[in-house]
Amino acid sequence: MPKTYAPPAGRNWDVLSSQCPSRTSLARIANKWTAMTVVVLDDGPLRFGDIRTALDGISGKVLTDTLRDLERDGMVTRRSYSEVPPRVEYELTPLGRTLQGPLTALCRWAEEHIPEVLAARDAYDDR
Amino acid sequence: MPKTYAPPAGRNWDVLSSQCPSRTSLARIANKWTAMTVVVLDDGPLRFGDIRTALDGISGKVLTDTLRDLERDGMVTRRSYSEVPPRVEYELTPLGRTLQGPLTALCRWAEEHIPEVLAARDAYDDR
DNA sequence: GCCAATACTTACTATTGGTGACCATTAACT
DNA sequence: AGTTAATGGTCACCAATAGTAAGTATTGGC
Image (cartoon, rainbow over all chains, first blue to last red; front, side, top):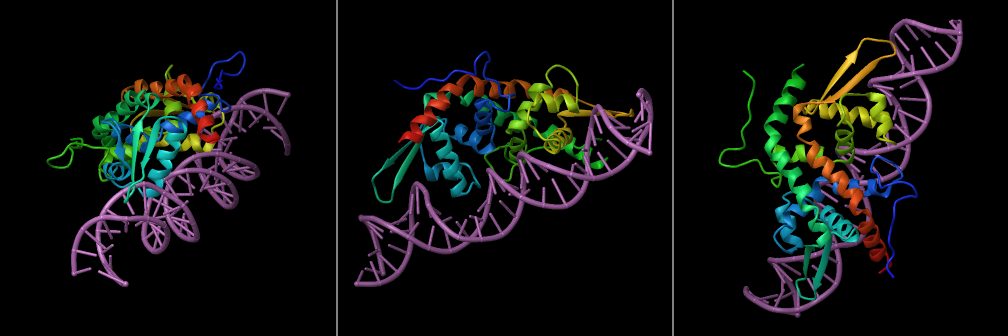
């Protein structure tokens, strides 16, 4: 029987409580590389190298770490084919797909509101 | 005349491009403290100390840094009253309020899906 | 004169992010 | 036979960021 989890007795899960495991989970998903990775995995499985290219500027180590963390938390699956050169594909799980809405929204926000943000920064730095 | 910004010629803003300023902005908002701060500022202005209490576990320095960055990017306003002891209130700007939807969704996701995440971690660590 | 209260600084340490070099494997060239 | 290229990593290292703990300024109340 698989283990199931419930919040601490008499409470609900609450990211605002420093003891709550949901806060650790928030820390993982509220991260630029996580957001970009999930967005990029939107159209089906991708190979490691393709993700690396799509995420323009990410280092191999950081991408490995990001994908492993996402895999551990059940958001992506890793499929490795015994070929040479090696081929490894990553794909969102159903759980991972539930993140696409919120994380895509974040990326869009950054793109849509960047003019206001840049203007605000100028104003602040000019004071 | 206030400065206005447009994306690089012939392109749109794109967080996936490492040169695009929207990626810096994504890095700021895709952050656990930013998310929690925006969520907590939902009901009107709050004092520094109240935010600190609500964010259970954040240090003074990190909260100061977070709030200053949000202020610089035009998402919160800081109002300081000349009293002793000092009183400083922080409030979301209209721009900051447009972040509430996406960031509240992230926090909720963390709370709602934490049982699945914990189960996935167990499964991964048991392999 | 001393303490409490608040919103910070400052100096320090720990953790994370990021870089560049290297590795194992085998097909395709020269 | 030796060399090159491709892929998905790892490793040792350095830089940047997050976090900790102590200190500062101000002044009303005791």
